[in-house]
Image (cartoon, rainbow, N blue to C red; front, top):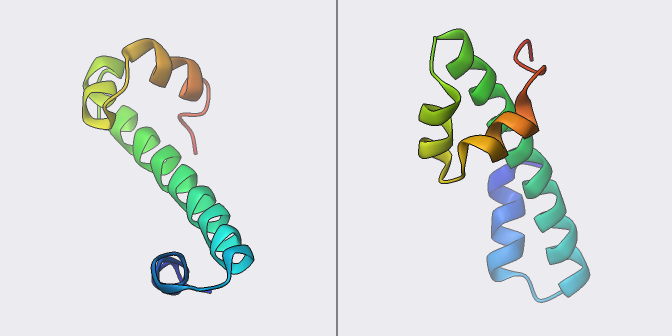
Length: 72
């Protein structure tokens, strides 16, 4: 299933079970994308503060979530 298909199910679906499953898949995809881009930003020399600002969270939140996972 593609992310676009999942999004369509969430927005236009009548079956709440299918929509909730699509939401869960989208959430996992977003978590994966975020982790990959945080790792890329760190490899490119961005500070935790810069990354946090882009994500709209505190420096402590992003550092706690991703420190030690920069090699992803």
